Amino acid sequence: MVHLNRQIDGATPGFARPLSKSERTRQRILDSAARVFASKGFAGVSLRDIASAADTKAGSLYYHFASKDELVEAVLRHAIEEMHQHVRDAVDAAADEGAAGRLKAAISAHTESVMERTDYAKALLRISSQIPDDVRERHNKHARAYGEYWGQLFNDARDEGAIRVDLDLTLARLLVLGAMNWTVEWPASLWSPESITSTLNKIVFEGIGTDDVDEEAVRALH
Image (cartoon, rainbow, N blue to C red; front, side, top):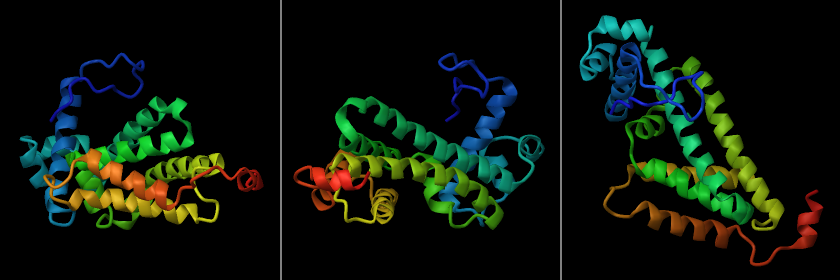
C-alpha cells in the first residue's frame, strides 16, 4: 500500500504533506520491495523482480536506489523505525503505569507489530540473516538502538522491583524479543495478538517478576 500522507524528513511534525510524484514512486518501490523480500527472501530477488512488482521500469528504480543492497537497507531501516515508533508510542501512553506497566505496553505493541504481518515486519524478521555483511553492519546500528531501548525498559522494571535482581537482563530481553519475533511464523488464525500478549506477560512477570518489591535489593542496585 502506498502511504500518501507519510511525513517527509524535515517536515514540521504533525503536518505531513502529500507526497510528490517522485516520492510516491519511491514509496511504491519501497513497499513492493518489502513485499517481494518478505515472500522470496533476499538472494532469490532481482531488482527487475521488484520493478515488475512496483509496476515501474528498471530505470526508474535505479533513479531512486543505486543497488539492491541500498534498497534492502532502506526496507529494513523503515521496518525497524516503524516498529520502534509503535512501541515508543505505546510506552509513552503508559507513562503513568510504572516501569512494569511500560514494559507490558512494549510487549503488547511489539507483538502487535509482528502479528500484523506487514510486509516490512516480515521482511525484517525473515531476511536479516540473509543480507550482505556490510549491509548487516549498518542495519545493526539501527537494531542496536531498538535493543538498547528495550534494555532500558527491563532495567527500569528491575530498579522498580518488578523484576528479580538475580537475572541476566540482557539474556531475558533477548529471550522475550525472540519469542515475540517467532510468532511471525505461526498460523495467523490460531491466536490473537491479545491472547499471545496476555500469556507472554504472565510468563514474564510470573516467571522473572517478583511478588513483592524487595526494597533492600532495589537499593543495592544503586
